[in-house]
Image (cartoon, rainbow, N blue to C red; front, side):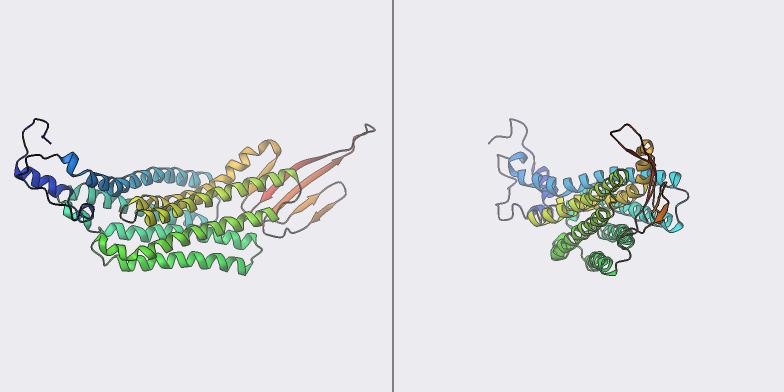
Length: 368
């Protein structure tokens, strides 16, 4: 095969090309293949290095895409955080502190993965052999991803506790899985911080898979518990039941997004262990946790605004259920900590055929 009629690259040029693609990870692809001799008269990079190009695409190409998507989601986080502090100044101080802590952790995580991408794709571009080494920020980012997930899952676990009428068994079951995920993440960081290469890091593949599996399990458990407790809170009133249906859909959606990312990371690390596709999913996981928390808090005003025409209001402060009618007023606690206040008036319309009952207002309140 001729070199397209152009001038043949000299030995130094071929050496530079060989050095460009022969990173420790990429060398595994054509290990055992005969080396390309500088004196060979037929030389074509497109024929010799297609596997190398595919390896770069599956490793640092996926890595870069993960950083970019994560940065986009971080922009959404900034917008949601600003909206929360501007729209809910009367929220309890511990909720405001939780939002601040999650936002700071999320910001540090984004800074760390951006730093690692700069080191691999800019600083070390002239020293490809360094691409096989592990940058410290790539390990530390796991810690802050774990902190973000832990804070958000603790918030949701507390909602399970309150909605279940302080059911200790249900709460401890969920909290055990959440703590297991966080502790395994700490163990991963403590071990990985001492490694220098990706070859060494591969020793922790089983632990990494366990973390992703536990993350998905905890998200499914939390979403399932919330949906079950909300379903039990139905009262039979159309307006309150419509509100509960919306909350169930919202709980499923927020838990589903984080679960899908965790499961995707688990599947890709199992199917393509030598690629970085799983890292791109993991980078976005913390961002989804942060946005799930903020969406949960910010949705209160959205749901209330959508329900203005039906005279339905919602807050995250619990009160007792009160029913008032022409007959009298009664109070009855619900089986959990969701409270529905229904003010009704009974109107009898004489038309020889029908009685009409109309509800004048419905108020639904949930605990944070």
